[in-house]
Amino acid sequence: MKKKKSAGIALDASEKFVSGLAYVLMTLFALCAILPCLHVVSKAFSKGTYVTAGLVNFWPKGFQLETIQYILFQTDFFNALKNTLIVTGVGTLISLFTSITTAYPLSKPAFRGRKVITLLYVFSMVFFGGMIPAYMVVRMLGILDTYAAMILPFAIVQFNMFIVKNYFEGLPEIIEESARIDGAGDLRILVSIVCPMSTPVIATVALLYAINYWNNYFHAMMYTQSPSMQTLQVYLYNLIQSGSGYLENMAGGTLTTNITPEGLTAAAVTLSIIPIIALYPFVQRFLIKGITIGSVKG
Image (cartoon, rainbow, N blue to C red):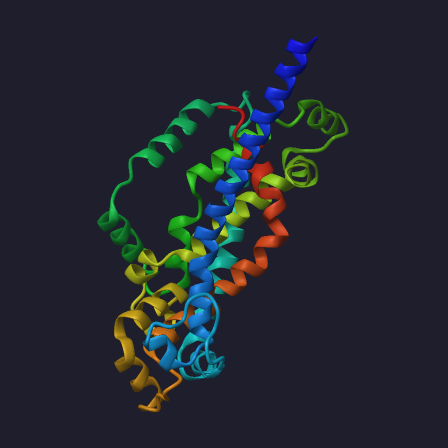
């Protein structure tokens, strides 16, 4: 009995040690993610003299709102935000539609050509034609410098589609069979039964698509030329690269001591992450559940 008791105590001690080590490591990882963000936000609300001197760490010094106001009213921030919201919103809806309507038939073993079509999607996921052929296709379609150029080439991401497909394969067939007996067709079953039962994976894939569209910089720069079509990421890039000269031209050389190029960059980055952070709490509870369940089957 004493040996068993001592073994139990040793096991509890080792479990506590592992648990404590896990908490410490997770805390360190969380700080590695949070502290850089706090540093950027602090610069956005600090006086330019403190920012230039490198005295701002994780809390604003000389709190001011001039930098934020400058970004909002003296630059093209709102136009870039509008373009990004349009691309993200419309693109996410189109991508969800194509992913769901593709994944549903591919999840049915009785679907003819299922293996061949699935293989083609896997092949296209592994082997990409390249940047130049993609640009030539967009140009031949005549959609350069439009919202369509930033949406249609990414209307479906194979990885996201396979997540939805695997989730659909895990749904009980008996529910669909009962609906067919009652006279429901494939479209009715998909809309009224399958999609409501697949809310976690749909929310997860919607978040993945939204983040992809929101953060897309390279393709937005490649497929658009006019300043009026620049997205938020292109706007941030131009803001960082152009520096004080770009900002002085935008405002007629009215920079104050509270506003510096570094502070303006921090303010623009801070404002740009607010919408995606505001959206995340509404779908984050589906994120882990949707990915893990949708990844069970191969």
